[in-house]
Length: 83
Image (cartoon, rainbow, N blue to C red):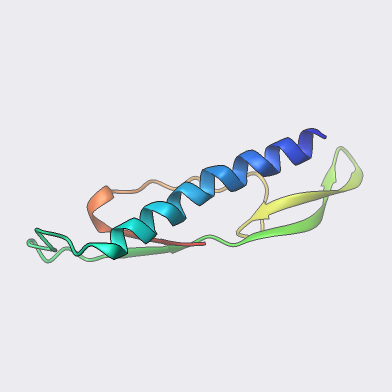
């Protein structure tokens, strides 16, 4: 039950990025990339896999193939996120 709640919270959290990306694609930027900054692109892969938790194999969600989760730091003006 706890894993299901965690999964739901994770999906809700990640769906906000998808929503933001969809909204951003609808309107072109007024300013654009005026400083010609490079764009960093991040791809996050979520998979349900068997993981070892305290010596027992259980179903879990891996992010980019690992547990614990990866830590990402973003600068708002130069990122693209693909899930």
